[in-house]
Image 1 (tube, one colour):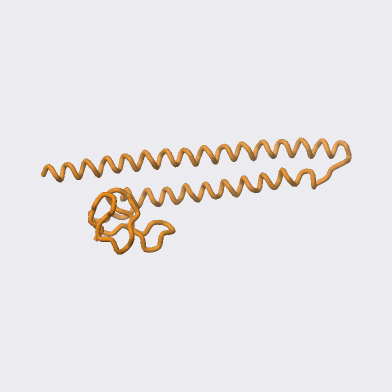
Image 2: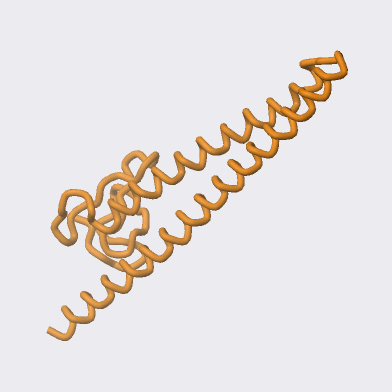
Length: 143
């Protein structure tokens, strides 16, 4: 009975740790995306101002504007990468915290995104090899 309580408490602490970690990582990514969006807005403003000044002087030259546009394109690419990381984080969080279809305790966890054959421990979230019977981190039975 005391062991069940201890295991239950340990699982809840692990879930809280996972949620806190995920929350911090999500906020870090979202902050970076906001920074990239602000950079894009500033690059567009600068390129617009330069383009107008060149046009007003009758010297409009696309080659002078191209570096701005390349930087904007790269920042959009970085935003897409960060959004992909956010989606992967959400998938991993659902798998580890059991927000996906319910699993029996000790049942094999689904494969981690991009890690063919590996399983995630339903107790601590550690990634384990497919042939392991127990988690190497917490000892939870995987099969």
